[in-house]
Length: 111
Image (tube, rainbow, N blue to C red):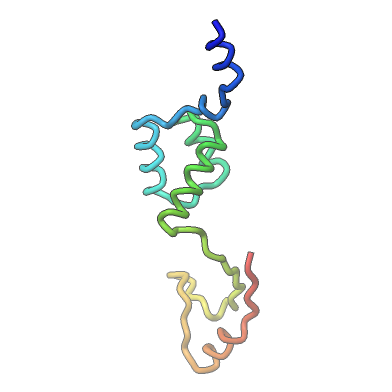
């Protein structure tokens, strides 16, 4: 009878953490391969799909990206003058040295 009391006293709540099963890990890996940069909506969807909490999904994604060195890089938003963009393809078109100078002098802001 004393041993059960000791066990209850010494029981660590972290020992009750459940590990992800193979199927859950498989689903997480498939989602990561399809898109490594998950939005909040993606994490909610994946959590429902896997039966995990959103925080478990977030942590797993964070750990995997860190492990695989695929952390997000900074994104730069640039407003290009319309004359530098081909309206049919959406690609940047530099027709002259002046166009190159315009491109070099743009203000770049990270978001």
